[in-house]
Picture 1 (cartoon, rainbow, N blue to C red):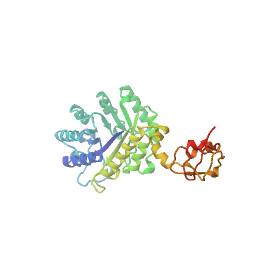
Picture 2 (picture 1 turned 135 degrees about the horizontal axis):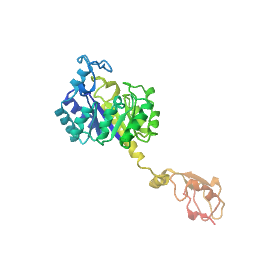
Picture 3 (picture 1 turned 90 degrees about the vertical axis):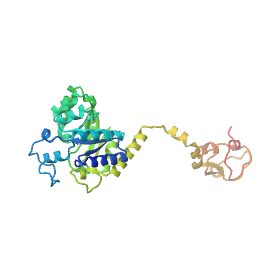
Length: 335
């Protein structure tokens, strides 16, 4: 399964913190880490409001974007560092200009589009023209707009390269609003389907995986008291590690089906120890008829299993047998 650890702007503009977050994601078992590229002058207006009031050092949202965005050289360093960890570097562009930089420098293998740009067809047109796969969150578009999006991407010949991510754009989203039923609705559109989580709760990711999503994106924060707008929507590194491990375990189990008889064949030795066999409850001589009271059912099983008891009581004793001994084929006149 495709597992994306969203680091976003948690680095607060520090390349050192960014590489530390990459290290945490690596130790947790992540194979893909995602950042965000915000070019303030190409993304919003000076009056753009904050989603949530969290920063006392940034007068405007554009100030915030400028403060936390990396220089071109720093982006190259960060992408190279991620690659050195044998992880995929993924970065959401919030403008055509940001996407152009990422594409021209061959920093990404696919595009992750935030739900705010799921209706930004000019951006999607540019991304489609690159031929790279698309992962698109749907938290801020209606169902009719999702259908429009499908038609648009079909017209650009990239629908078969698209993954739609179920997403609820609340930070954090409460569990009673997760609405995993939408995953089934998206799957009916004939595309790959994923889930982008904002709950900060491991349970949400587990439920999404149990529903067979092909891509799971979760936010990560180094601590619950860390600074930033996404902390309440994020998992801790140890929670990320737990989620990844469980997902990998589920994937291993699901990818290796076996029949009941296959599994029984592997456990026949154990079965003989734990299943009940048939034993003589008393001494008996040749020719005597066998009744249920003449038998005991004990572990371990030998030549006759308790499941065979009706076959035994329909026969007669063929030779002298002793109480406490297991019933053997030679003990019985089976003709």
